[in-house]
Length: 162
Image (cartoon, rainbow, N blue to C red; front, side, top):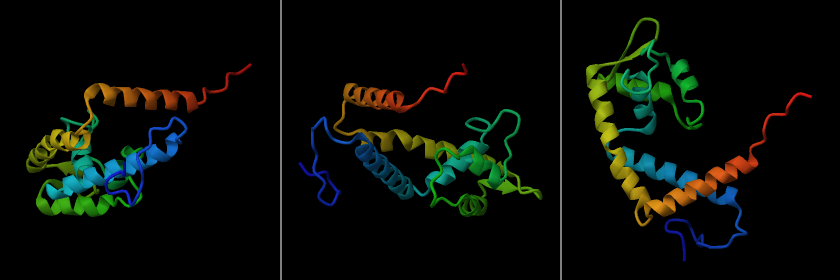
């Protein structure tokens, strides 16, 4: 069976398939799909992340809900993509009145921004449902278990000192 939208890739149930190849394809496809769905709803994934990292009700540190662009980039190091431009996305959020900047470049969430973050968050279950269609929860959990085992099998333990 051909994988939809894959330019000819065929589904294969073969235990000799290379996991890294398929996990990369899955990652890229899921990110692209998620971002397309978010764009249909009027926001980008980085815009949502900025709001989340500035919200005291979400990812903002308890001691400080204001951050600069470099601080936001650092906080998102593990998942920000090379094509993401947080400064550009922050400008959009500033123009919408969802964040404001002080004279030191610290960004803060506005009440309108918190309301927007909550609206954006409400779209997550629908997007998840689209991604998970045709996959029952047991199969999904089994796939995650396999991926976690692959990670454990390929993560080296720190060398112990003799």
